[in-house]
Image (cartoon, rainbow, N blue to C red; front, side, top):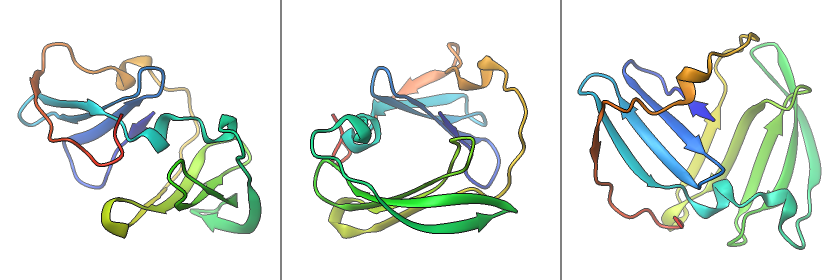
Length: 136
């Protein structure tokens, strides 16, 4: 999965297979490699006792998504909103110290993606990351 926050030169690649998260900065050609938070990679649908409650239909950039409520592995409320193609349009939860977290799509473009945009550039310098609460 790739996340491109607003602004230039920074993006995040999440490797669900290995539970890793990479913050990549093109400006200084660096990568911060860290464990992804467990609740991002644990596969909520496969967790014993997972329960999903259908909530609202939301429109984001002219695309509809269905909001579902569940809890993460630590019992925190999580809302996810995939569109009809399964693309995650919005997610919200509370992270360390109860701080709210919201990631939401600003625009949609449907097209095939080049696999290279999901790879960590091997020539970039790797930097150490501080531990993240909830990381593996």
